[in-house]
Every structure is written in C-alpha cells, then in structure tokens.
Image (cartoon, rainbow, N blue to C red):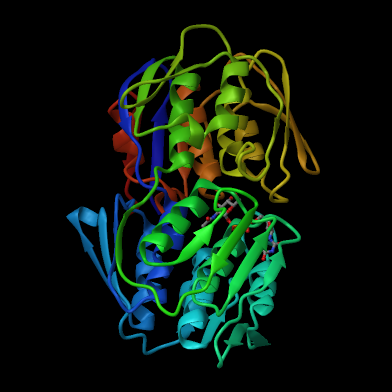
Length: 422
Ligand code: UD1
C-alpha cells in the first residue's frame, strides 16, 4: 500500500485547481439508469470511487466511456440486462445504493446488496428504503440483498425524512422523477450536490421544484431524455485546500471556489483569523502570521459546517491559541483521526460526540495511519505544518476522494511525495 511522506515547514503560495465534486458525480452517474438516452458528465473528478461506480454501472449493462483523461464520462443505459448490484462492488462503496431508486423507477425491479459496515459509524440505508416504500416499492431483505419491486410502476407520494440524509434524498428524488403523479419530499437534504443532481435531472426532462430547500416537489414524467452536465465544484476538496495556507502561512488561490459552497466553513476560518477573499477565478486564502484562534465547531447538514471537513479543521485547531470544542452531530465514531493527531503531539480529549482540542505550539512529525478519507487528508495537512517528517500510511482512502493530492500541494510549495508500495 502506498504511503505519503510530508516534510513540515515553509509557506505555501500559488494556485490550486479544484475538481468536480466526488459526491455529486457519484449520484449523477446512476442517473443514467433513468434514461435510454446518453448522459454525459463533464468536469468529472479522477478518483477511485468514480472507477468503482463505473464498474458497477457497467456490471448492470450500462456503457460508460471515460474521455479526456477521465474528466468526461459518456454514459448510456439503453440496454440494462442485469438488475443486481453485487456485494463485491457495493461493499467497496456505500454510494452504490444509489442505483436502487433509478433501476426500480425505470424497470420496476432491482436487487442491490446492502453496503455493510463502514469505518465512520453504522450508516444504515433504512431511510433510502422507507422513501422508496412510500412511493409504492415492495421490499424484501434476503441474503444481505434488498429485493425491490414496483411492477406497476412507482406512485408519487408525500414523504418526510425523519433525519436529513443526503443519499436517501438523492435516491428517492431520482426514483420520483419517473413515478406516476406528484411526490413531495419533506426534510430533504439541501446540499449543493442535491441541487446539482436536480439540475441535471431537469435537463433530462424531469419536473422538479424546491431543490436547495427542505421541500422538494417532483411531478413524475413518462420518460427522461439525454443531457450533458458539468459536475459542480467539490466543496470538500475546496475547503481542504483552503486550510493548507491556514496551516502553513502564505497565500493560495483556489481556482473554481465559491463562498456559497463553503459559507459556514468560511465563518469559522474568519473566526480563527484566516482571511478568505473572492477573486475573479475563485477564492484566495491567506494567513499572515501567528497562531490561529481557537473556535468551536458543530457539524450539521448543509448549510451548516460539513462533517467532511471536521477532521481537517480539528487538525488545524491542534495548534490554535486556546481550547476548541468540536461536536460531531452527523456520524458517531468520526474522531478516528484524533489518536493519530495525538501521536503528532496534539492535545485532544474525545468524549462521546465531542472532542476538546487544546492548542499546542507545534505538532511533530510521526508515522501515522489513515483511517478514512477525510482523516487521511487531515494528517497530511497536519504534517505540512509539523516539525520534521510525517509518514501517512494506508493512503488508499485518499485516492477515493482527492485527485493528484501530492501534485496539487507540491505546486504551491509543499514538501510531499508518494512512496509506492513494493
Ligand atoms: C453523504 C456523503 C458523505 C457525507 C454525508 C453527510 C456521498 C457519496 N457521501 O453520505 O461524504 O459525509 O453525506 O454530509 O454523498 N442515515 C440513516 N439512515 C439512512 C441514511 C442515513 O440513519 O438510510 C444517517 C447516517 O448514519 C448519518 C446521517 O443519517 O448519521 C446522515 O447521513 P447521509 O446524509 O445519508 O450520508 P450519506 O449520504 O451516506
């Protein structure tokens, strides 16, 4: 397994281009299953999770052609001959469950493996299933698989999510585009990735209103057509690289960045003493001198502070002036980066869903273990500002969500390299 070696020290200066959003692309790709016409995505990120979704769609009979080095994905689902999403693929990536709604809506049946365990908590899919049941799907759980049927087609209904779920909103939204009649989704997720999905579905001919608010109304149509759609900017990659100059000092411009994608996060950066300004090309982030201020952070569904930036923010606060409290309200057990940061000299006390971080003057390089995607990158950021060398092991998580991380950080002056496993 590859490792990443980071040497701390030195300001960062220059530009980092931000890719299309992994999480948006992972829901836009299954949307191809709703139509017999081609769907082309541009600005796609080049990541192993996208390769996994490609593999899954191809196993169902979809054609997926990757062009321009992976930035364009041309998809066609005119011939779906297999309606079973196999455990071997689904277990690698939870987002695989997103093929369920589209397949069921289009052909009236689908069998999808349950995703199983996950490093950052139980993460069930019950809300996906309840939403589809509300649209008339008949579900049966057998041998670890969900067997779903809607032989006469799905029917529009009003469904209120008991908990805000990004994935469940996406799955039920896609299914409802082909249901008979009107569907109203209440307490829906409002993430930019949901808005991006809805905009793509509208281009395909769907009738959707209210996306970006907590009530989405969908008027079902008989069929959807083709479309070409650019994937929205990855707000998590954006926020991650915005933190790089906050850790190291200097000034970095994030190309393609927009404040409205990272509003709550920018408020916390401001409170920490990091300057963020909009430029014609994106966002510029600057930290002139001294330690950042301690700030308290609570993760919440969008537009709140994203759970996917919690690990990176915690790493920054490890060297803040004062004590910060981070509260994780989305996923239990999402503080696995804390023991690794402690190995680097951080003072963190985790108690339930809270972590208290008492800032130290400097972190010190150490060998650490990447436990999940966002934890991995938080350790790289910490390493950039630490004294000495940090070796981040098990970085395969990183390749699921960050394209060319070493190249992008090296371009702004970071000392970082990948060591290939033997
Ligand atoms: C998506 C993102 C992930 C991000 C998360 C929260 C993708 C591919 N992944 O994950 O990066 O961290 O949103 O912003 O887009 N829940 C249930 N039952 C369900 C579904 C969810 O109880 O059926 C719970 C989860 O355990 C969690 C909460 O609801 O506590 C929110 O999860 P959800 O928004 O569904 O996350 P994902 O869509 O899996």
